Image (cartoon, rainbow, N blue to C red; front, side, top):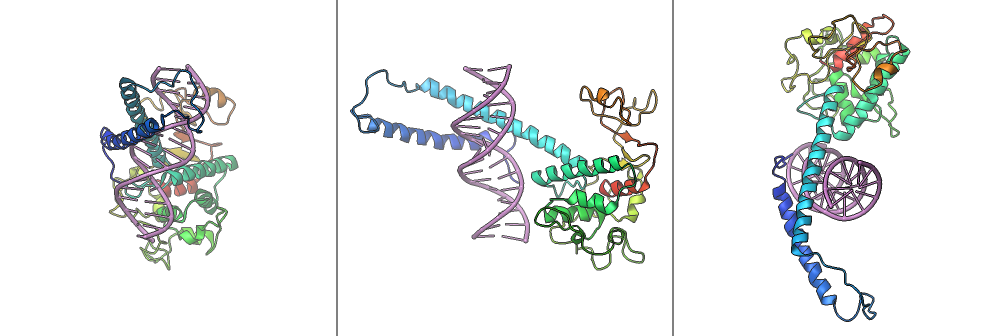
Length: 308
DNA sequence: TAGGCCATCTGGTCCT
DNA sequence: AGGACCAGATGGCCTA
């Protein structure tokens, strides 16, 4: 999208102001023409103090304030977009080349949180199909294709109906998700490389078998499509149930093991006091999360697929 | 060309 | 009064 640089929009804005000023001139003129002996209803004009028309300095001042308000609004929206971009990076299937729309980002984020919560509350190996179905719930077909593309799945297995409910149709779930022996790892039978349903753009393809590769030990994020810009989503590793590997500060890990890291909202530590998760004293985002000492490799597979 | 998505402007409302 | 937030309007770009 072609947009003016951050400092530039005032150029466009000036144009609009010119138009508006012209409109104002017209309206003032019309008002002057009406300014006879009768009011707007045709009745004799009432006496009394006239509504003072703003002077030039006042209109100039209001224009300046409008300019400033526009600039603030632009800045605010940029902040909002920055936040949204951050969100894009932590939901599955981030690509610089094919960005999720705002609404799809929010939907996917909601689904992602939901899917993770479900998995946590279950406290056991997640059902892969259910996980992905939850992820795709209510998403548009192109986004569903994108998510499927991330996992190298057949998107038709995750079609959503008109109510946004994900319907399963097709082969057995795991058949749909795993690569097939003897076939192109990135190409399940019946689906050539370009045969992901329409809307799927060049994107790094994940094969389920490839998910075993530890994400952050892979020096080359370019393993798949050359169109892929490299990983942006949070790398995940599953030494526990969900371990999100971020760039940890050097201090991280010092002073003992923390099962879970929380982001630093005040009161979070108290919130987690009686929880089965332990919270780091720094109060940071959950990087490592261990549930009941269990280890579920499949979850690593799932997330390894999403977060190359 | 229609429709989706987006950035920006704008005026209203609420809050400090 | 002024700033933050919001929603509607508008126009540009892109894609099917």
